Amino acid sequence: MKFSDEQIHRYSRQMILPGIGGKGQRKLAEAKVFIMGAGGLGSPAALYLAAAGVGTIGLADFDRVELHNLQRQILHRTPDVGLLKVESGKKTLESLNPEVRVQIYSERITSANIREIIRDYNHVLDGSDNFPTRFLVNDACFFEKKTLISGAILRFDGQLSTFKPHAGGPCYRCLLSEPPPPGAVPSCQEAGVLGAVAGTIGLLQANEALKEILGIGQSMAGRFLFFNALSLTFSEAKIEKNPACLLCGENATIQGLIDYAPTCPTQSSSLALS
Ligand SMILES: [Zn+2]
Image 1: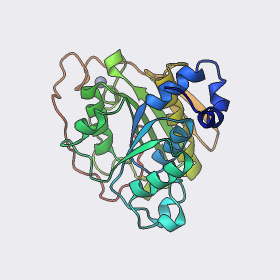
Image 2: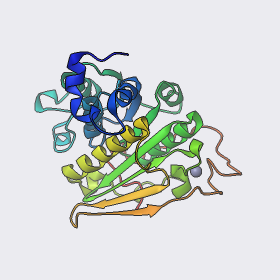
Image 3: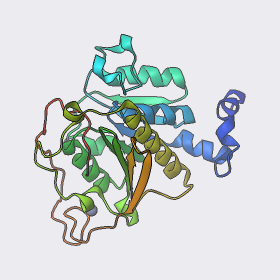
């Protein structure tokens, strides 16, 4: 693959970076990233991945754009209210970078279709807003051996980690074996979220996806990041593979995907762990 003058110009500020260059830019062009949710996390992540020249971006969301989404879901604009989020998102990403191929999935992602869909991608970025989806994505990534970059937000807090049990690290279930009971953790709809918190965590997810694609820096696998916007602090914990994990442990009992009942039909972003 040879770069055109226009491509070299577009990506010049990152192609001069050590560890990227033409070789890295080619890796980005060949990369396929699946993004679960075109909302508060998926929006900034998708924008930065498209801007960086990630060749294929898959965008899954069955919701339509609502006015209250615009406070943080920056893929969408006021005239987009009423459109499917994936349609609005595709339009925005293509206007930012027409070279990016945006595949959209407007159907509900379930155990019946997720494995087949993510099989076409190398990396999965979870920007979903509820526990049933979070567990479904984790389990599907485990079975399909895909690197999962997971983010969560609530109020002024955010969290992030990368899961790649196929490379020896923990999975999401190593930390939280089952979804919490409905109502145990408030949703953003109930508790609120600062848009800039969604932006911060979504951007960090894009950062980690770019690092995983390029093979540079230190992976977030085995590490868990906590962010608080009010104190503006980042802290980090080491996380390890749980030998008793129901999914990736020695005596794993989960052999297939599970569709957990929705905890709330119109749930917004939930904090995955607290
Ligand atoms: Zn596990």
